[in-house]
Image (cartoon, rainbow, N blue to C red):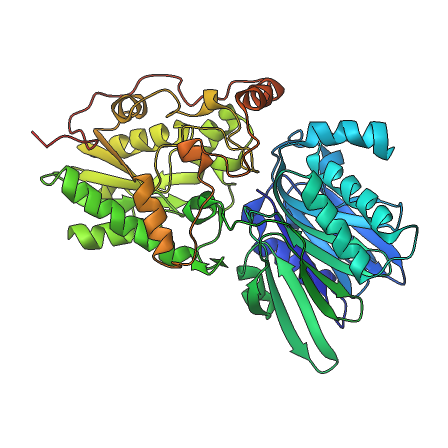
Length: 507
């Protein structure tokens, strides 16, 4: 998961790109970068850290030009906190390219060998994004039949990328002296939207990971970039698009709706906020069906992603909704922090309880998902320390049991609390009195209720079904070996079950 943005405007874009990356900061906090172009020359600044820390006034002054791209990085396939892997990436042959990528290639090692043996291109980092850049550069050279670049050659090159690359990728590319290219993998796993702003001098264009960037920057969201589609905007603002994949299936990543995206975004025609409300609706109905006599006094969300689901659960269960945790907004999202020790330490720095909402009460905590279990256990303990008599936990998503290989940092099963445990065992580990998970069929129904046109979703972390069809046990074992460390959320036992919200009646 990363955030990408590209702009072609009639005036300087440095501030637009900076503001857009601030809006997309939730998609990556490891590194940030901006590249612009003026007079055929690229200008770039990037580095580790948050957007506000990477860019100073002197950096922004140097980023001149009316078109450019930006990136916020969240490490997946590469090394965490490696400054060399901050994006955009640059290659000067054959035409001069700068690329920013959101996603993860699943055949990057195979492509690296091809680059070395037949394409004669050098890969300098461990990042699959650099591999993707060099594949595109090679395909551009072949499609241009030398060094004459035109619109058809660009689209043929993207078709070549689709034939060679596997996995998830949403991409923005600057082609020196030519224009902005953006494309999405044939399954549309990672999001990409395009918008327009009409000005006196013509039209300005923006592509970004989420529609919220359009709203904040004053652009009108036109549509999502379709799976397999490429759009090309030249430096004069002329817009072209073409389907470049031979076969496409729309299968957006379900975790975008569960957790990753901002609630005020619309992705593939789905309001993220509305989908989360629906998740709460289905989860409340399951709780009433499975445990009709559950003894709960109050519903409390674990901020922020779970708030819409928690509010809807409280409404449908006819229970009070209360805010029991105060969030320190200057602490990063614990899900995307690279180390287990860092995540554990940050939970209490990030959240603090309001004791009067817990004291003497039986509380139902609602979270968007449970991944490693570390955060959940800390929060359950905090609720008890604040005086809760009983603590039940509801997850708006199903158990996360399988590795994600499409750009989310849960690549090994050893770190997933649900990988080899049933719900009752998970409940004991996190120390809750009861636990209920969303059913995967209900999760799909919740999102599909907002946009019935979506027939498929990428749900591999829940069901182990990988939509690209190329993931083998050997590949998953290789990913685990590459990571080289166990980040398991299982590092102790919690309390015993008093009320089992898994599937039995309250006794």
